[in-house]
Amino acid sequence: MTWDDCVVSGKDKIATLDCFPLIFQRFVISAFTLAGITAIILIAYAGIKLILAGGDAKKMEGARHTLTYAIIGLFVIFTAALVVSIIAYITGVACIGVFPGFENCK
Image (cartoon, rainbow, N blue to C red; front, side, top):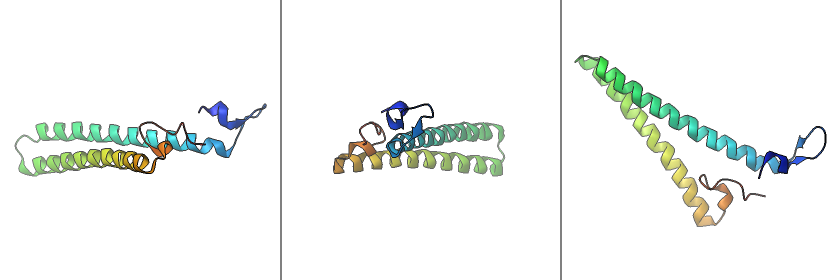
């Protein structure tokens, strides 16, 4: 489904409720992408903090905490996507699946 498929034809191209799955799909994909990029940046930042700690135990501990929380966040992101996909598979509602997308929603 594209944006042109869910809007009322005409000069103004007014969105209808048929656009909701498309908007939701783009929101979910954007949220997962942003969360993944943020987790990767935090992992790199924690690595740099760990290198620059120079043996200072307090700074190394802070870097380890940052790295731990970034990895936990990345795990939560992947787990959330997996849970949504499993629910979509079990219920047979393919349009809520994260990976195939919302193209089949009507």
